[in-house]
Amino acid sequence: MRFIQIIEYRTSRIDEFNALLDSWVEKNAGHRLATRSLQTRDRDGNDVYLNIVEFPSHEVAMENSARPETAEFAARVAALCDGPPTFRNLDLLDERTFQD
Image (tube, rainbow, N blue to C red; front, top):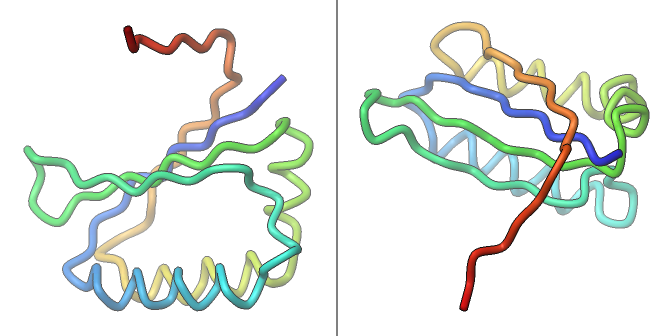
């Protein structure tokens, strides 16, 4: 079953955050376990962002979390955030596309 993790965080340093994310994506080419990622900004919250990351399964997501490069990235990102992130761990039960 596909698995989605939503990570909510607050940062006034989004450009630095994105530069670090771009570097991580490039450095881990061919070794990434996530299948898709979306970055969103909360229109109603100042400097509030949510990353929506999809994995093939919960097990693969946990494997990703256990990787040293993921831990290093998380620590570096945390230094750019204005507090700890909030995680939502979701099993994908249904998917629908609404395009005519």
